[in-house]
Image (cartoon, rainbow, N blue to C red):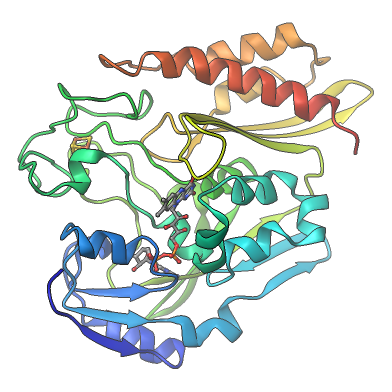
Length: 336
Ligand code: FAD
Ligand code: SF4
């Protein structure tokens, strides 16, 4: 780990001022980094993958930025709310089980106590070649250097949203619940606060895998919002072991049903794509239809129709389809 200057930001303007100096073409490469729970940033600094010269602790903003508000039909979550607090919130468990479960099934209890929602959605890929600087060829870490995963061990890598430059999986869970529920992300920067659909935050790798989000240098995520209630919703996650593990394949499902007929449906996939992945074409098959497991199977087929397998990860397509079908079944049959 290289030496760095540690600063504490006592209010949003101090944080923004410190981060405005960060320069760099992307927030993740910038020499000034915000520190929330530190559970990803410090890891990557120890590995020398991220080498900020200044780290700005934004935790003093917690009183303003860690609030959980259920106001009427809407939910607002502050970016510094801890994963554990949101997962354990009784009203979120009732009105948004997909959100509570996505958080509860992530990482470990200790990590969830430390880790913030903002840091969670900004976490970087777990691609082994990205996290090990002894591999020179990683387009995300060294643009233009190639991709060691393409012909390497790519069991954990993505089958959707990949490019010939990068096949790294987006690793988080919470993001799938946000994208499924049409969540929005509130971004605070030097020129004020803007809100964008969460679906517009992450970028597919294309020809520039090093640019992971649409956040501009100097901007911070201050919160997330979700409109409406989604009590009939589920997050299902398949992984190599039952806890403390990233998804091999996951599905966030939300249904609005009446008398067995689906009025509205949302489906997002995790563990299989380069970004939080909304399966819009597949979810469209459900609308207006009487739910049964045969329909769920067809939806799962369509969800993976564009998947591109590599040498070691073709199993994710079969697994992912089963996860989608089972998550749909669970959501359709749950008591609400
Ligand atoms: P930090 O480490 O403080 O920050 C991470 C990045 O986000 C930094 O670049 C930082 O500058 C930036 N950042 C932080 N806050 C903001 C903000 N408000 N605005 C803009 N940028 C910001 N996650 C899962 O989802 N599922 C899992 O199964 C899972 N398993 C894990 C297992 C292990 C062993 C570990 C170590 C982590 C695992 N994680 C998993 C990841 C974990 O959830 C993240 O490390 C955590 O959520 C990051 O939050 P943080 O507050 O600690 O972020
Ligand atoms: Fe780097 Fe992406 Fe290739 Fe992994 S998949 S080695 S992150 S370019």
